[in-house]
Image (cartoon, rainbow, N blue to C red; front, side):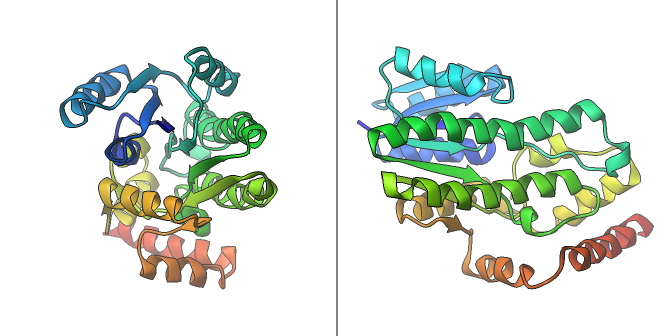
Length: 267
């Protein structure tokens, strides 16, 4: 039986990935920060996939040494990870100079450092074994420097490009690295990102115009991962949009988002 490890698997896109891997008879190892979400997930998986082995652990992926501790835990349980899904992450809305410094640091540690460490630690293990798949959850926001979520967009630009770099590094060793770049998605993302200033409230409206379901996003990611794609979009139109956004300068895109946010503030 193959084993999939999913971070942030208690809700949203991560939870839908749990269901997809379970449907394909994978053993699940799920690390998530919220114990209540893990408890609810355990009941759901037991009900819908009673024959699937699950290991659910409360863990903060952003903590120093978390990746090493998670690998050690898996080795102690004799669990060899075939697929790693780095899904854990969050956003903070609002003017950059106004956001809470601790929330900002926590976001960057999780979105950038935690993900990088997971890829380093589990990627080395997969390289040694000569096989494995890693799916990082990037974002279309990584292509658009957006007013009111500048640091989040930068963190996802990092994920998008970092994934391409290590994909090339590990390809000759039988390890596939893919990045899923979803648009705005119906999940706890909006509630977690919510900002108190006028910019944060305007950006929330800007982002929530058209949202995809977590199920649709996870299905696209799962299909692309299993097909061996390195960069995965949710639809063909969104793939074209990602290509087009690369033709514009970051300054031009940022100014376009500024105009939209100003309109929403004035509305």
